[in-house]
Image (cartoon, rainbow, N blue to C red; front, side, top):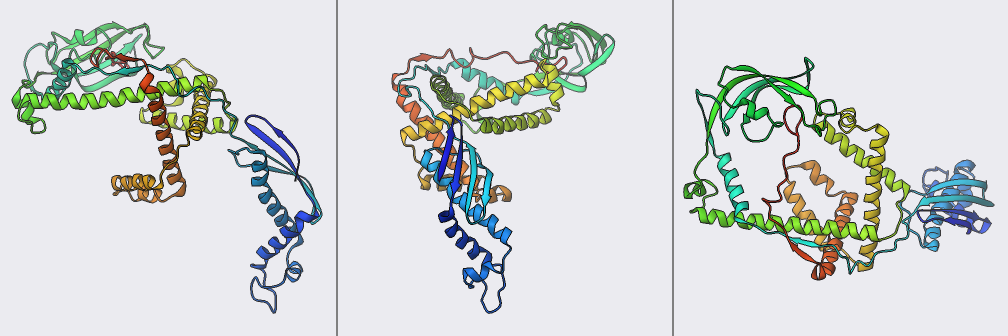
Length: 451
């Protein structure tokens, strides 16, 4: 059947020839199908002999159906014979066709590439064990107190820790710049929400004060037009509120989930931080293992999958831009990129994702990971409970493609868990410095606000 083939690592092309012996069974099957829609006097629908049906159907329709049947039968066979798995819909090109006598077609498709896995049982990634300190608990308690804090209007100059309500307008070269204007903006002084110098300049002013602040944006500010530039903010101080935080004691514990004592609350906070930190450490370790495995393995990313993944990433980015009130043009301007730069960057990320997916799939095969169907049903039942008020989501959970996606994700999770199981016992383990010490400074917001 296969007269020639051209196999590459990510694609394959066959030339397939059919002769008279192939056509006869295809002709009979085609006539059987066509008979269902043909009314022939003296015969019930679909019961007329093939030679009679052939006299009552369009010869061109019969010829097309015969070739379609031959090709559909050939496709799984030629891929099985070559021991490759197609990952795109095969493309069929008819080279020649003499109905009922001979035909030659070219079949091409992207295929799952060969993969040479790294030694996945002896990866070298370090596992960082979280260390929970009293300071981490204190930090949570402080935030709880912040949330329960009350504010009252005061008739005095603002000081650090006060909450102020202001109108402001940012001007560069006498012209208001985008994102630099707000009315009735609430700001806790000393929170570090704005660029350096802004909040300090509000200290000492009372409600009703109108004044200007001369500032220079940081040189590394994300908006290129503002980075390192001098600006003026016109300020109207509308209100000063003193923020009164509750004491961190047993009474606070009683207001927070019904704990009897501060000690009980601290113990509960510690357990929650510990559980979350352990999950985060495990996930970081999985990411590190996967990156090491991908870097040490050898395969290629089929262009069809990279194209598809590139489109997905761009769609996700577009939704993200929309929720942030941005456009692609805004993003490119902020990052000093051209659209070609952006597309190249996205495509590189897409290629990495595709390669990672292929390698995990190969690892699943190596480890003989199988998903128990009872586990899939249990997962679906849990999801149906979560989305019980969303009719559309419940309906989607009956979709075979959605179910298969859930099954595949479960297989990926099981594979990564097994990868951890194989490597964690011999992994070098280091202690983290603690959540509080690891905190990063807030990133800068638009205009005067940090983002």
